[in-house]
Length: 423
Image (cartoon, rainbow, N blue to C red; front, side, top):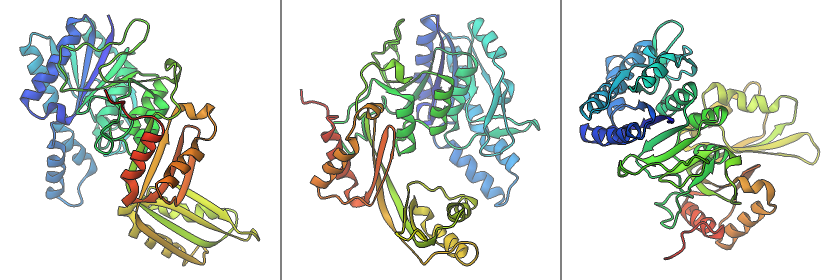
């Protein structure tokens, strides 16, 4: 008998028919003799509707009441899932976040989970009851409902899995696993049987939309195995996590690097579009200059990504180039222009929108030299100019013109041997 946490996203529970289909996946696990908890999102589109109502009610609204409104979508889904499971002959009951309880801090709209008491869930699962838990929400120290931010149901599922010491956490979504790149760009993209936490974290942060970044961070910290699979699969298809830990699908197993015997040099190619580049020239190279540049941007809630700094020959000034989302470009320029009137000294500021960040990711890069150089050559062979470069142990990213993004992804995918071979 295993303990399984199963999470179903909004498209997987979009209507009663889909909830019934998802419930058949749950029933399969119960019939295998497993103890099961289920974490659900709101039905597709409902959270946006609830957010719209809250904003229509008052532009400047109480964040605590906003959370009470938008958290209700998951409560509806949890109740409906429990009803459908009962109709299928599976004992089930729903739990709101505060009933578990899922304890969070008091950062309404973007709360972080601080603790989950597992006793009640474990007690019910031991009795053969499926616990259907609302994702995305918890309870604050002030006894108010909180929400975790958009995409927070993935984080809820991983946190519940860690709390009940689950054998794995299955994330059911509208795709059948993690691919080497976006199949819409490269039809020959392969579904990965396994990917390490670190690789998945890089992919998630670099534009892959399969899993939410916070959930991967938590899974890696708590050593919670994740399985990404499609809720639209045949519910009778049994996940193949064998006694020895081997995995044969369906879906993709996200696990510790040590569980992956043959580590590919490059496991995936990601693309993040709509990046803007900003350059400050002639910045006075004084202690604390980086704080003077990026502090005001942080205060304005602007997320900075790639950063490159070049010191002048005389060591008195530096050029700093970095990227922000296109949507934050004008705001960033205004913030830095204002900073230049007070604490920040620089000669000029320039920038442009319409770039894309292309990255190659793979834990095998740690033990293989020359991956970055080969990436640059592959792009050069296609006539693609590189604007910025950043690297880590398992990732190399470049900034290029957005019009060449798909060409770059296809070229690198083929270059690193990731294309599916023709039958």
